[in-house]
Length: 307
Image (cartoon, rainbow, N blue to C red; front, side, top):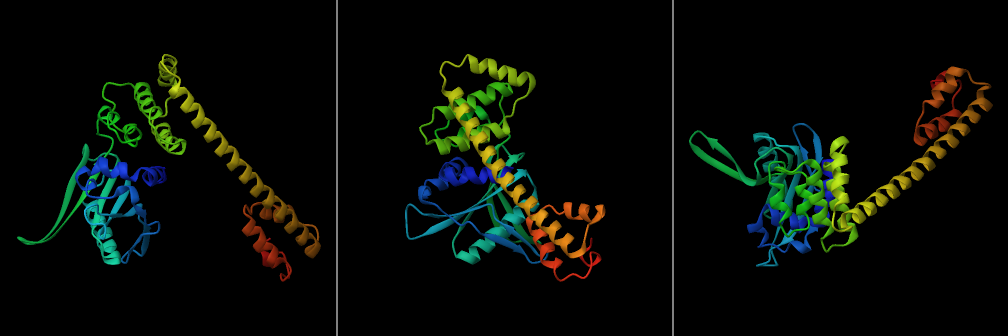
C-alpha cells in the first residue's frame, strides 16, 4: 500500500515534499518543473534481481538552468540500518553513471527512523584510510510532531501529519484536525482527493474512536469536512462500482469461453466425465481456456490434454 499511495502523492506534491525534507537544497531547485523518470531501474548483478526505483525526478537548478540534478526517493515501510545506506549508495552510483548528473537521495520511512529528516553518511575505509563517503536524507514520519506539520504552509503537510505522532490528541481528534486543514486548502479537487485518501488510509477509526469522531464532526462549526468526506466517499464508491463492472465483464468473458471449450471437447471426445469437467472449471483465466481450446483439435485423447 505504502509505495503506490506515496508515489501518487509525490507525483502531485513533489515540490512540497522536497521543501519539507530538504529546505536548503529546495531553495536552489526549480521544483515546479520537475520531470519524472518513470522507468528507472537497478539490476543487482550478484542476485540477478531487477528493481524499479520508486521516484526519480530531474530538476533544473534555479541558479543555473543549464544544469540539473536527479532527486531519488525510496519509500520504505520501516526504518532500516546500514544495509539501506549501502543500497541507496548503489542506486545513486547507477543513476550518476547512467545520466551523468548529481543525485540527491532521500529515503522516506513510514514507520521508525529519526524524528523528521536527518543526513545519514556511509563511509568506506581501508584501515585508517578513508576511501569514500555517501550521504542521503532519511525522513522518518512516525516520530515527527503532527501539530507542527499542520501549521506548515505546504498542502502535502496535513496528509503527512496523519502518519505522525499525535501528542495528546486522540485518534479521532488527530484525524479531524488533518481533514480540517485539508478542507481549507485552496487546491483542485483531484489534489484534495489524494490528500484525503492518505488520511483515510492511515487513520482508520473503529468502535469508540469512530463514535468520538462522529461526535466531534457534529460539533464542527462549518460543513467543510463533512462535505469533503462525502465527496471522497462518493468517488471511492464510483471507483469500486467501475472496478466491479470491469471484473463482471471479465468474468462473463471467461464463462463464455469455458462454455465454448466444453462444447469443443464434447464434440471431439463425447460426453465428459465429472473429473474432466472439474478440471476445465478449475481454469480461471481466459488465457488458460484459450490455450486449452487451441490444443483440442490436435489432441488424440483427453489424457493428452490432461483431462
